Image 1 (tube, helix red, strand yellow):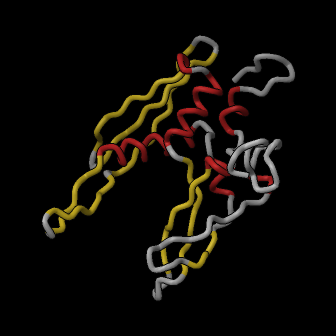
Image 2 (cartoon, rainbow, N blue to C red):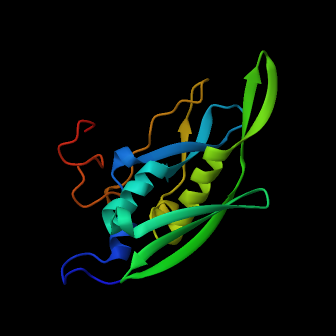
Length: 174
């Protein structure tokens, strides 16, 4: 992937750049038997990944397509580099959701969740958010509604211009 200018970051560097704190979400991966602590892991929402692609390569220089495969979907993410389209693929299994209708519990496949999962996975093949795998997993206290305090990351996991807590300079969330 080439430079636009000598001092400008390459496409790969722009894609792989860390996200600000308000773009990093945390989800519970597992809980202790007593349900008082949870192992939480960071992730980036699909919309933030799309924005990263828009900012790094331009809205006209990337496209994604989906194909049902097995029990899920494959996402092909293509980026135009030096006038040529380069495609990488990854897949996600169907996301199954529990729903209640008139007191009856059933499960459904979430198409949106499955597409988002496949998209997030293929973005890591391009280096976007891949550094999140280097962040140590955290065990945190949770309440009866599985709520927890968002962990604070070390400064090296945020952009260089981030504030002490990882937010954009001048943001309302500081």
